[in-house]
Each structure stands twice: as structure tokens, then as C-alpha cells.
Image (tube, rainbow, N blue to C red; front, side, top):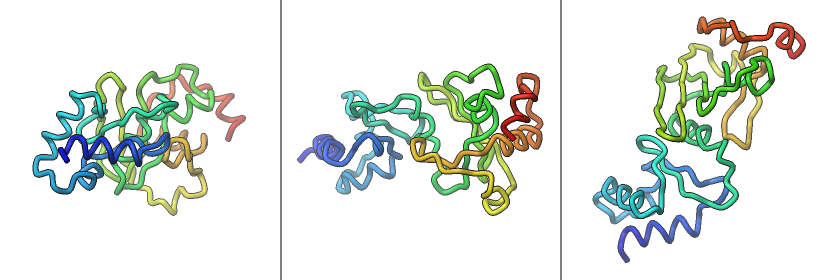
Length: 180
């Protein structure tokens, strides 16, 4: 069987609404005999089988996939080996503490290095380094199953904003105090 047909068959059989964002290394297991994975992924993207989100991350379009979760799922795959959690303006905007909602931009704290990942038309993923250990913030985190990532409380997001010296101009202190 041709590698692209083999990849298509595996994705059709295994991908679902919860599992449709893949790292290139994930897809390598679907076609173990393929010697040129990069070429295969390029062909699969051109054929419309996959959509490239950013370098090394691919989306297999499935029905009823919530498009607002794509950047979060990509972030989870990009830094799967690091401690990451949703925080900063993303959490504060979701909680109504910041009146402006970042469009196609998500911010996460990470044990890895700080970096902004350009995901083209999908937006940007901002990773901000933290030296905090998981045990230090575990009481302020909850798992967001829809986004496949940990999420900071408003209190922790405010701490992270101050620790990273982010602009507090848009923060509504009254709303923040009510939620903390």
C-alpha cells in the first residue's frame, strides 16, 4: 500500500474529535516503512488530508471539532515534555478580568524556554518561561479537559502577570479582587 493511503487509512480509523492534532513523530508510527516522512507529510498537506498548524504539528480535520481549541491542542503537543499551564491574559480574559479578548493568541507558562510560535492563519502560541515547580502551583491549577492543558486560577494568572512584568493596564482590579 502506498504510504499516503496507509496514513489516510490509519487517520480515518483512529482520529476522532478529541485526538486529531498530531506531532510529526506521532504520524511516523502510522507509516513505519516510510523513509521520507517529511515528504509524505508535505504531500498529505497538499492533498488536503492534513493541515499544517505550525512546524511539526498537523491537524486532521474531523467533523464537529471546536476550532477554538486548536491552538491549545497544538501547544499541548509542542511542549508535551514540559510543565505547561494556561495563564496570563488568556485566563484573565476568559474570566472577564480583562475586557479585551486576545484574538488567535494564547499565553501559557512553561518550564521550557520562552518562545512565540507562529501558527499562520491559526494564530500564535506564546510560551513564557517560569521557574516555578508544579508542586508550588498545584493548588492554583485545574485540568481543562477540553483544551488538554492545565489552567491557572485568576489568582495565579495575576501572580504570573506581575512576575513576568506584563502590562496591568487592561486589568480590572475590582473584578480581579472579586474572583480571588
